[in-house]
Length: 110
Ligand code: FES
Figure 1 (tube, protein in one colour):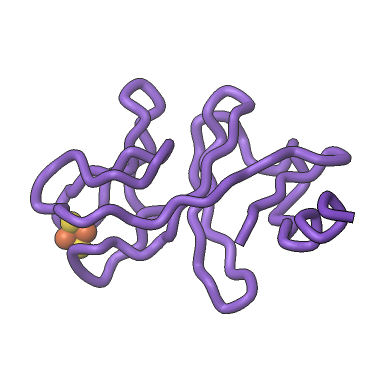
Figure 2 (cartoon, rainbow, N blue to C red):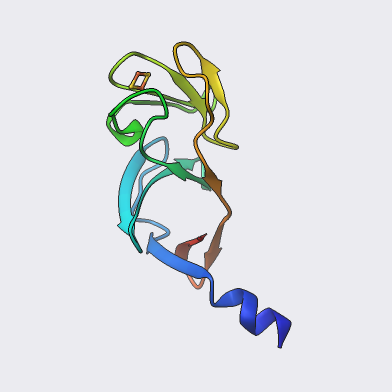
């Protein structure tokens, strides 16, 4: 019963093969705009809106060597594994979300 209740909070973003390795893509779901990253088959999801200004991280550079998203506006860096700000001028983290692959689909826990 507990597992059933918990599973209802997972939302499907795309099929597992839809997002190429090393890319980030925006998804709008349930009023949230999220940035999904595929790092060699491991998926990570954070809020897409930068915490420094009005720019979307999915439109910046995705660096899977350092596990960061670079904001396209001022170059702030965020660790896509946990949302932490790790490069100026970004200071506040973006929210990160749990991700799983189930039945061939990438799902996020909102
Ligand atoms: S808007 Fe993202 S670093 Fe300034």
